[in-house]
Amino acid sequence: MSEKLHKILARSGYGSRREMERWIEAGRLTINGKVAKTADRISSNEKVALDGKLIELSFDEQQHRILIYNKPEGVICTRDDPDGRPDVFANLPKLEGARWIIVGRLDLNTSGLLFFTTDGDLANALMHPSSEIEREYSARVLGDVDGDVLQNLTKGVDLEDGFARFDSIVDVGGTGANHWYSVVLKEGKKREVRRLWESQGMKVSRLMRTRFGPIVLMRNLRKGTFRDLDQAEGAALYSSVGMKNKITKPVAVQVADKKDKRASRSKNSQQQRGRQPRRNK
Image (tube, rainbow, N blue to C red):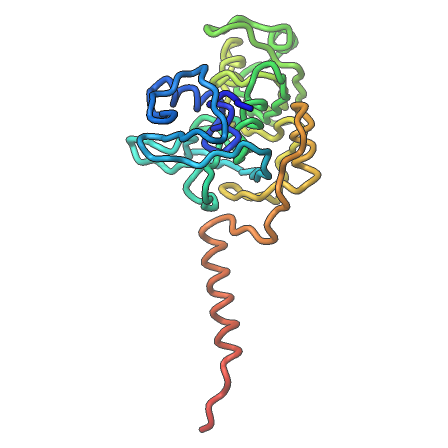
């Protein structure tokens, strides 16, 4: 039985389906020595090469990992940056035979919840507009927000790349010119939250994503750190896009950042010194 090449690549953890289609269109993949095409289908007895090197593909359903990550401001969501800025991939755990696929990119000055997964099919489903996954943000807005502004934003406005709206807006307090609002929308257009407020003459001075689908960003997950989703969280995320749960059992301990690594090494070193036998004087 054969399947489309880009689907097999995504299932094998090389990237999302969209990214795999771009790789194929760029001529980076061959099937049995011939340059692959977007509509090509393959079976398990065929040889697939990426940039001239044979790669391993998974034709059976496999277990996957999903990380939740609390992105800080000033960190980019791409692996390659000509300016050398810090990126969200830098401190993720290393993988063998797979790669981390980012779900729900955030711009440079936005913080909060991101997902990383080894399941390209899940990444594709979560990012596809037809899934209508809710994204919730906490936005600090500078400007005089009245009833007309709130009505316009929930009714919808035309942006340069199409119609957009908030499904809900909740005033969560604030003082002076800045006020905090919790907003929910079901799309992932570039800078959509900021552009919606800007369409009404408002400026967003702080923005953080606090929820993606059924997963909420917990307060105890510090900025710049990550953790594996547990079985229940993974099942809920797969269920939100109508997919069967394929999450692995999470690892027992996650080293989330460089500070934790240094502390862990220091503690282990102290414990080892403490177990050394005393020498006779």
